[in-house]
Length: 91
Length: 402
Image (tube, rainbow over all chains, first blue to last red; front, side, top):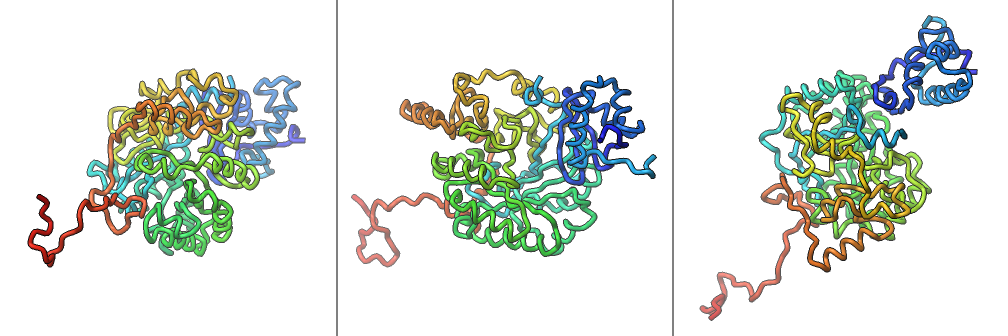
């Protein structure tokens, strides 16, 4: 369950702010992804600052009812290596 | 607001920027969209190019598509490539392969390029016969040699970039086999009537049944095949192909030409679509964000004659450049509209004697053809009105018509 895990933005990814949210570009695999909500951008940016995804969502103010949708979005980003699991040494 | 609507109203910086580094080219392809051949003496200097890259880095334009002309014949090309990569601007460059030697291939595969470089080798026929007719004698061998050099140097995933024409649609499987052989990815794009393409479009653009063949092939075998988002007009056949499926001109794409002029899209090198120049105050960013032309392209479009069509949501009226350079109104159907409306409009205009193709506003074609000129561009030869006269003609009145 990704909500209980520790994640962070992938080091090869840059975020470019846009009116709809942000463009995420992965310099390694050259994938371009659109983060379609400003809240999602804040979540992705702050993943590394919190012990797990759930507390990140809480900190950004995402209502609990939307947690599953955000978890699905983050899993999609993980598949494209936009975000990475945080290992012990990252902490 | 849906994402596509955000794109239509324009982003703070382009997603996909094409930068033609030079109009100079060793080839004279019949359909060259930038009418390339001769170097323009006003071409941006190395320092000016570096300044553009610095600005792209600031604007977070993550990669540029570099083309020409043949970009690799600029003496500072390899320097600019490294400069861009070192400034977080990835490079995808298009080449006919002429300078992709084993040494250059090894450089491209090396850590110096850090995997930030993509190479697209242009090939418009899966056989020398089909390719060289359009791109000129020897160009097939040059491209294949480049692909072999890249593969042998361990460069992963080069692209074979094909402009789909009436003469090569039947070779799609053969192109896929070539890609397989060279460890490359196939990229298919649309022939545009831009540049010299205007002269050969009527003869080379895919026939209606070939459009269907292409669409069916992409649906069946298109996974992993890149299309540069260029076939969105085919969405009117039914299911949309992957991609943004909208005209990105001035909204999410644009072109910087060799002298720094900024055009709405790579297929629209014409004063009508000229937004400004990167050398004027404020540079590229000011042009992108403030040009009245781009503001106009980002304003809501009505769809004109196409708005009532059931397929409008799929094809969004098609390609602006294709309409402009075939003499069709911009708010009407695409000339290759799969419902046949574009062809109908073209026929009506022609019958009324009202089809006028806009004159080119610039042309860097070679004034004197070279041995590289493709067959398609051979000068028209008119049958002689009377028998030719030679120095040894016997009749003293030969060549004299009363």
